[in-house]
Amino acid sequence: MTTTLEHAGYNQMTMLYPEEHELQTPTQSLKDPHSAAKLRLQASLWLSRAQRELHDAIFLRDGSDESLERYYSARAELDSAEAYALMVAKALLQAG
Image: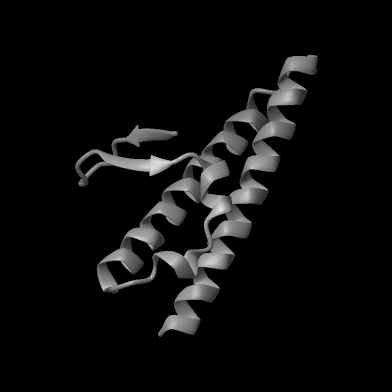
């Protein structure tokens, strides 16, 4: 499955859902400098979105079970995004 994100300064970009990112190894996507840049951008966008979701979850906590679940979900998403960003960085260092 894919989702389309709009980012200021960029045209629409189709990205994999985070779960699908984790199923791919970054080294599979490093065929040329353009694909390496795209991979970096995707990891950066995912990380930024996860950080924003966690920030929102922290400041919207009201003690309810729903807000606590939102916080846990956002924290897990950020952990996944950070892990993937580290995998991308490692793959880029090995390729370069």
